[in-house]
Amino acid sequence: MPRPLAVTIGDPAGVGPEIIGAASARANELGLPPFRVIGEKDAECQAGSPTAHTARIALDALQEATRLVQSGECSGLVTGPIAKSAIAALQPDFIGQTEFFADACDLSHDASVMMLAGPSLRTVPMTVHCALSEVPGLLSQDLIMERTRIVARAMHTDFGIEAPRIAIAGLNPHAGEDGRMGREEIDIIAPAIAQLRGEGIDASGPHPADTLFAPHKRGSYDVAIAMYHDQALVPLKALDFDEGVNVTLGLPIVRTSPDHGTAFDIAGKGIARPDAMIAAIRMAGEIAERRANG
Image (cartoon, rainbow, N blue to C red; front, side, top):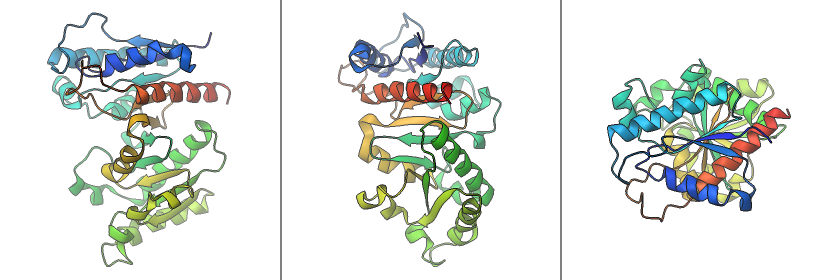
């Protein structure tokens, strides 16, 4: 038998336990890879009512699943939805799960990259959990090049694409329109793309973000890199909300997650769809197998 995946329950007051249960019930039917559920078995909580206790359960599950993967007992991990602010109240340096796993693997936060993947689109935000007003100051040629290199390697090793086509969005409307609406494209993004192309990476852009995700454009690239969180996540969630998967690239371990939150408002009502959790489990298994056979 292959080593199982570790699947964390997330915040037990959210939809994590029920979508994992639904995925487990259909595992054989769907041919999902084997997985172990990590979390407190008899958590005392009320669906839809998160507490410090449920946040502690979610954090403990993350830590245990990480241990299992790093020790080799599990081949990869899939994380259930958490409430970031609730965990941050317990552990003030907690930013998000992507950053948590970078820390666990002794990597800088810039060395771990969040990719959202669905049937229609793969997209990466260059900057993630920060205020929109901070984005221009965070962008640099080095950041764009480092993260694009990580994406290019992962598309090859984890997704089996030999020469990935990477489309890079501009920051400003109309990709700056030759500097009339901002100079980030001229001063930062275009020079980074030119250097990446010089390294043999098939990167293109800066593309205007308002047309990059149109149907006739999506077939021209394998992954799109956006400059900030919502520029990347809005199109992915509009197209593939129920099947979107959050994948952390650049880690020595495999990590995926459904690309939705805790949904406290519908927890316990039996209406949460397990599609994204099923897709996350399937994708983690495929990446783990590809790495093992690499």
